[in-house]
Image (cartoon, rainbow, N blue to C red; front, side, top):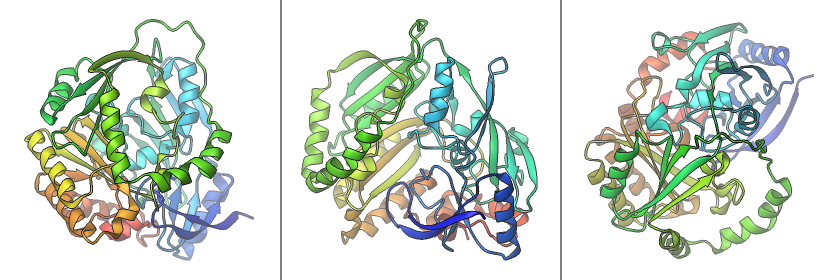
Length: 454
């Protein structure tokens, strides 16, 4: 008997919750049997593993979702040929702990340790080194794919196969099921990074700092005080240490008791206390306590997952969930356009509570977000959606982004309109044709597909 139960699920941002029949196969045979039954009866369903998409990639309009978390094994590590083969639901807490202990790591890491290999391929995620290494797709060597006909095929990742029928990259969980993947790994002398924390006082200074350091660093990420009209903030410039680490690597363990205390006591208090005035003060305070230039040595996890020991689930401090809008704009006129975004947020009173920024290089493929440019992330509580001007604000932000040749990152979005989406991602027509060939009844369906592509 294949396990199933009803459960309320939502995107990572805790909005638009839905009661779902969650089918939980225990092995590949049960998964194939489940797919066969759904296929024969033409029942629509979605897929979930880590559940880290902010948007609607794994929530099902039909109320049926297959849980893939049984696919959680590390299959093979080849240190000679620099690759690791893992099942698709292996998450980055497990993977990073395993690889760093052996002196290796993966590039283009997502921003959460709960993300899985399959999710990062389907969403083609990006990290703080995107300007150097591109999105997660560049890590993929090959993948084993379960098609809806129950057959397993192999996808080899190269430019010729970018738009092949069984390509899972950027497919948003809508074409097939990733069983396992072979991923590139890279040798490290030391898992610690030397971090140069630099204050900047304007968007002009920030962009210049990004440009001046793109060939000197292994990662870069900026925090911007979005309440400041000039765009002040702090940028972290990181470089892996070249000094061989003689100390044994210590695994990161999630402090479950600490998380329980946060959920029961701390997060509810923060949700009550935090408001625009306090957040504005915190942003200002954070900027002023930083020295103009500060060089420190940080651990791998402290650098790529800075909140993991402090607030591991920052989404829970937002009332009723979190709105997240991540957009990318080309390098051309970037300072002018960042100021325009800032002015729109100020005009409608939707400044980002925490505003992050990264640099990217272009990638071509299904619903590719990465361009030669910069992304900016705007975040605030979902309770703000009750404001009368919320829809007008969204319309202005999305319309401005599209007209400037920019894009919205789909797996972090809940509000993009079908009309703007089709202008941003004209390749949706080709994707629909591919999907219809491998899924002629459109059985693989999520809310994102229903809202934007269908």
